[in-house]
Length: 145
Image (cartoon, rainbow, N blue to C red):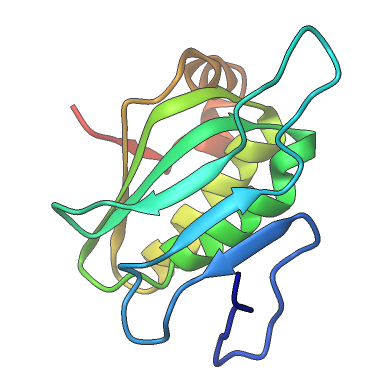
């Protein structure tokens, strides 16, 4: 696969590949290099792909310690998607740990600081539970009806 190129000079984190051009995020794909888990079977890698019908991304997989660098890279791309509202579809996410929810809160703050909105769709049960445990910290997260 070709190397990622980004104008900001940053390099994707170890264990992640970020492929996208500088003009549009249409070809962006971020995925975890370590998809296999030696436990009871294999787990799905964390992937992020652009939404085709609106500005945003679809996350699939699990957001935990093993995929934290991938989530960080994906959210870095998501925060640069142009438009007044950026959509993040979580319908393919099986699990978000508390650190992943904190990363969503930071991404939301970045987008909000640009005068835009980050709208979450189809949050998994684990996100709802973390929001219940930390309501003040997560109050800024916006979930689509």
